[in-house]
Length: 307
Image (tube, rainbow, N blue to C red; front, side):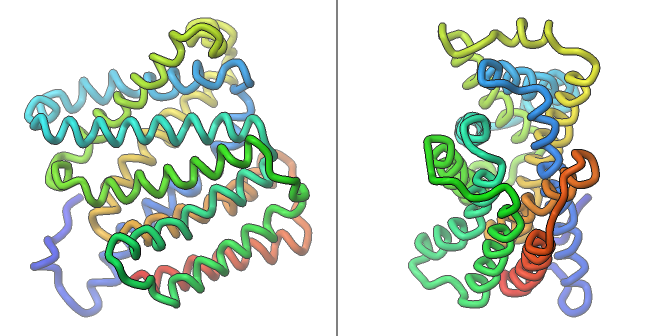
C-alpha cells in the first residue's frame, strides 16, 4: 500500500480516511498483543524465557530473508546500523517485559506497561522543548485511569522486582517508538528490510544470552518439550505478535506520530481482558467494564488531540 507524500497529500475529507488507514493496522497490533498474554502463559516458564524468545524471533527470520533478499542487499551501512540499533532496543523490551510478567501479576503488568502512552508524548515534548497538548495529556490520563479500573479485579500488589522490570519495558517501548521516527538513516528505507534486520538484531541478543550458562533451558531443549498446542502458541507469537506487529509500527509511525501510535497500542490491556473473557474464561465486574469504557473513550479523544 502506498500513500501520498506530505507535500502532495490532499486536504479535506480525504485526510481522516488516510489517518484511519494508518490507525486500523496499529489497533490490530494492540488486539494481537492483547492475545499474546494467554499464548505466552501457555509456553513460557521462568527457565524458558530466553529460549522461547529465540524461537519466537528465529521462526520468521528465514522467511523474511528469503522474501526480501534483493531489498536487503541494497541497504546501506548506515541503514543497517540504524536497524540494528532498533533491534537491540527491541531485544531489551522483550527481555524486560517477559521476565517482568514472570515475576509480577498480570494486573500490575497491564497497568505499568500502559504508561508508555504517557511517557511517549512527554518524551516528544521534551525533545521539542515544548509543553505537550493539554488535551492529549487529558486523554492519556483517562486511558490510564481506565486501565487502573480494568485491572483491579486481580488486586494491586506492592511494587516488586517484576514491576520495576515492566516499568523498564514501558520506557524501552517509548525509546523504540521515538527512535523509529528519528533515526534519519532508516526513514527512506524499505520497511520489510528494516524489520528483518531489526528482528535479526533481537535474535542475536537472545542467542548470545542463551549461550551463557545458567540463563535457563536452551532453545533446542525447550522446543523438544513442545506439543502441538505449544507450537501453535509459538507461531501466533512469532507471526502475528512479532512480525506483523513491528512491521506495522515502522509503517505507521512514518504516517502519523509516535504519540498517536503509542496511544492506540495503549489499548492492549483492554484486548488482553477481552481475550481472557472470551478464551480464558475470566470475568469482569462493573468496575472492569467501566475501565474498558474509559480506555476506549480516552483513545478516541487522544486520536483527535494527536491530530
